[in-house]
Amino acid sequence: MEKVTLRDKAAIVGIGETEYSKNSGMSHRALLLQAAARAIEDAGLSPKDIDGVVPAMNLISFEDLAVNLGTEDLKYAVFPNMGGASSVATLSSAAMAVACGIATNVLCVAGWNGYSALRLSTLGKAADAAAGSPIPMSSMISKLRDFEMPYGVFVPAQWYAPMAMRHMHEYGTTSRQMGAVAVACRKHAQLNDKAIMRGKPMAIEDHQNSRMIVTPFRLFDCSLETDGAAAAVVTSADRAADMRHRPVYIMGVAEGHPVPADQIAGRRDMFQIGLSFAAPRAFAMAGITPKDIDVAEIYDCFTWSVICQLEAIGFCKRGEGGPFVEGGRIELGGELPINTHGGLLSQAHILGMNHVVEAVRQLRGDAGEAQVKDVEISLVTGWGDLADGSIAILRR
Amino acid sequence: MADYNKPLPRITAQTREFWEGCKRHELLIQRCSDCGTYRHYPRPMCPNCGSWNAEWAKVSGKGKVYTYMVAVQPFHPGFASDAPYAVAIVELAEGVRLMSNVVDCGPEDILIGMPVEVVFDDVTEEVTLPRFRKAT
Ligand SMILES: [Zn+2]
Image (cartoon, rainbow over the protein chains, first blue to last red):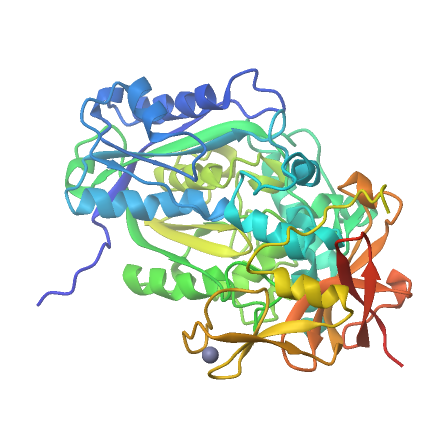
């Protein structure tokens, strides 16, 4: 029997983004719908053509999406629930649906009023508001609540800081190396029209002088909080060939979950993150190796998370992520340019759907001043909910 | 104690014995009755063998700092006057890990690998939190 594979069976044919700001002035539903409408238009489709919806997490309901798009026969609706890993995970779900004929045109969308309404840095106050009952954001948070919040652990920076401290202890990773990630993203943000940090260049000394939030994370190790949304439209490879833009084919996709997934403390190997499981599967599906990647959009909730993921993907060995990011290797013009839009650190925090959009732009040749030359294959990752991982390998 | 303004754990059917042990100043960790594997946080099933049978084993309370972080910026009003404060992941001698604070020791004096032992902090009438201090 022929081996079943998802490789090259689906393609991203439309992308869309809202304005990225600190005050959208729109409801989060309107924000997600605006990104959706723009992605659908970019694909040359009409909203009624969408017959599958995959929002990242339950940020918007299927009903809200369907009724606003005018969908008359919604054939597929599901959401991945992996925090920041959800955006990239929407692609695998959409690809499966169109490849199997479950749906024809699937909308993937993520976004929030991440500054004006739901700031992750205010989770501590949310814990109070929800005292005595599970916090609505996710079931994982409610577990954190009973065994970690009483000790003063509230926000993602505090969830991941102990991992980074252990990495520094075991491998000698330094704050300056984490700073190299922040500097690369900020440098790339200077070339991006939508970047919140455009016009605010940063040197490594600025990173080193920024205030400590939680050891080892300084302010500039932490991602932005942003209002905005982004979306992509996925269809089958057959249909994609006749559509408005050059298709971006999904070569390989996978998700992965660390063990145990609901807490970091109990993991025997703290650096065996979701992506450690997912990346080999995605590369096997794509039939390539990390050496073949021309540009990578790595989920950068924190600078150190990028270092950890570069190791998990296999761009370098375990423990070598710190030296790897130094010397401009991850900057435009370097061996492996990453986060060419500025990332969550310096463009905007759109839950990583902005990374998907940028990975597509690079393959279309539409990345403007940040265009990497001769891009054939791009990679995009997601990280969330205590280091669940997702990955997509895309080609033109 | 009435003005204790930090989040308290919810005592649930799953976690009651852990917190009741703490009130008696005993550190109880769930252990599979069939294969002997310790697990924390409390859960219904043994991840090693799938058994639903578990007992609450009194553990030594001695361990080492596996890793830690120092919270400099407080993100909760209840911790505003504590900052900077340390939160450690402690690996108990029994092999299981839990998150807690390291007390009686400045954040700058905490080291990965440092031996620690449990102390019990009766923060309210209902709740006692296990914390850790440097072991001699
Ligand atoms: Zn067992």
